[in-house]
Every structure is written in structure tokens, then in C-alpha cells.
Image 1: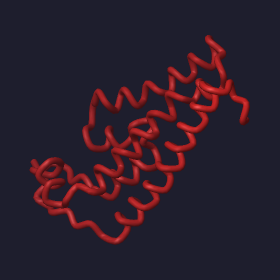
Image 2: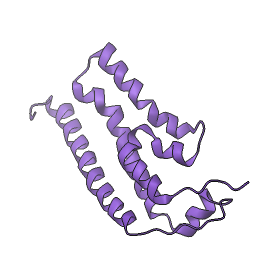
Image 3: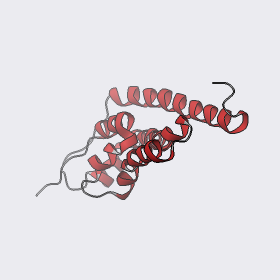
Length: 137
């Protein structure tokens, strides 16, 4: 029986849009993937911080932001993997070959833009809260 074919563009899109909850990990490795479950744990941690501890609102969403940043990095890694290496790693028994098209570079540019904005914004806000007590917003 042939294994299912994993599309690199779909995996990159899932990492870009839903990387914070690990959807790309569950697409690539069905079942209980440890890193995917770690991404998914960001949601309950955020809820626990919001409901029980009541810290600064930025600290509440920080686990989710870190998980999203990791998802952006994983989207770049997935998208920049050569097709031959991708097929050897994820499509060994599928009998099909991957062929990336123009959508993949567009997704990579969007990933770089969104990831950079989220990373720099997170760092700026974290340093603002830590060093000035939130004086700038």
C-alpha cells in the first residue's frame, strides 16, 4: 500500500497560518507528534495564565506568541527544503515526486514579513515591560 503524498506547499501554508497550534506537525506526522503537542499546549497555558494568575496581559499571550514564532521558523525550514530531500524524508513510499511552483516563494515572502513583524514586536514589547514597566504603552 502506497503512503500518502505530503505536499510541501500545503505544509508551509499550515505552518504559516496555524503554526502556533502545530497544524503543520499533525499534517506531516499523523498521530501523537511531540513537538505538535508542545505547540498545542500553548493554548491551555495561555488560558491558565488568563484565568488563574492574572499577570500583565502581554505575559498571558506570550506562550502563544512564542509558539507562533516557532511556527514561522518551521514554515521557512519546510519551504526552503529542496524537493528531493523533501521526497526522501516525507514521501518515500508515495510513488510521486514533489514539484514546487510559484506559490511557495510567495508563501515564504509572506512568512518572512509576518514572522519578522511578530518577532520584533514581541521583543520590543517584552523589553518595554521588563525595563520601563510598560511606560511606552
